[in-house]
Length: 321
Ligand SMILES: NC(=O)c1ccc[n+]([C@@H]2O[C@H](COP(=O)([O-])OP(=O)(O)OC[C@H]3O[C@@H](n4cnc5c(N)ncnc54)[C@H](OP(=O)(O)O)[C@@H]3O)[C@@H](O)[C@H]2O)c1
Image 1 (cartoon, helix red, strand yellow):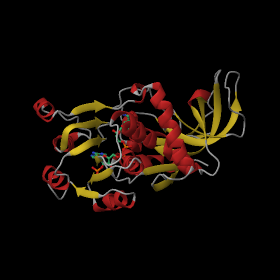
Image 2: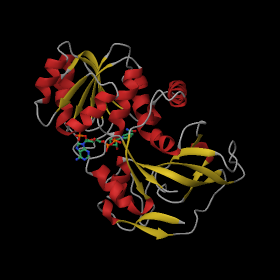
Image 3: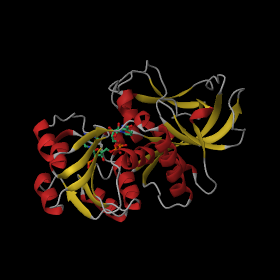
């Protein structure tokens, strides 16, 4: 099979293309013919060996895919050859085939195309679990979304609107903010042309109820300062590459809550509820991933570079078929 391969750690252009044997399929696993894969920021970090986990080289990057089941094994219950599925893995998805535990797969609803299915898994699930179970967003809440043009940020805007929040989108360009507005963001702040702290104070004078922060760096503190009493600041990731230090006196004086999002921390009953609600949005096409670029498999390095440089708006995909 054709696969993108990271032979040595470094920037995205270390990733090349190779012919490799089909992946071995263990008990409880299925083999999926990948049709489309989505690029996620952690793919870039794994290739640079800057992620929490180090994968020995050579490895096939890629963590999110949609495709068709081509082989099942004993113990891989619930799936048959020919089923359309999507799923996530730590690595291995930027290839014509991937072997995954059946428990990690989701059946693609009828009427949902391969690009939508591939783009929906990580960003939308991250955003929705964060909004529902950590930020606990309610109808009428004032919500600030940093990285508003990115995968998680744009998903948080679309889904926050569905939850009835009034959203202030923060991003680095007019182009990103235009897309955020097209999905329902009410207020738009370009932090490269205006002082973020002042702009947030003017935009939400009564203070925000929640902040979703997938970026970190210099944006985090002004966003936290914009919270009202009892507000929730949710740190999701550090796409800026800079982990901010927040003065704790702000937390004390403002009476705000600083929380982190990780999938494993969502209580199981809420996790199931959130997944059901998200699937309903997908099936009813109430939420549609914004896909800004689709690359062929042999241009995986270019796709990763696009994401690494923060230029992507919404999701970047690799068409493997
Ligand atoms: N906790 C979790 O379970 C979880 C799940 C998914 C993702 N994440 C993390 O969340 C973060 C965002 O993911 P994403 O998929 O939204 O990423 P993305 O689509 O690449 O968007 C990240 C945004 O960060 C901003 N940014 C600022 N400085 C940047 C830089 N030096 N390089 C790249 N981007 C920069 C960019 O917005 P501006 O141009 O507007 O600044 C960009 O749109 C990542 O760190 C990822 O690892 C965490």
